[in-house]
Length: 86
Image (cartoon, rainbow, N blue to C red; front, side, top):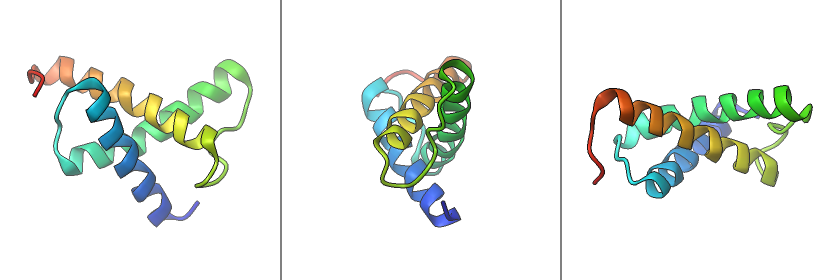
């Protein structure tokens, strides 16, 4: 995927993760957490299930792993920053 695709994927995954968890991190932080979450989710899926999930922008597995990874990171950041739910 191109860098633009990673940014768009990260932005959408981060915003979905914020909506599902109720934690608000901000637009830029949500994008960063979404991008890192996509990489984290892909790494965990490959390590645990031996599948390649970050193939292309339009694969469902790419989006599912990106959102799950972003949710994990939003929750972890919420624990360390002490921000309350919005």
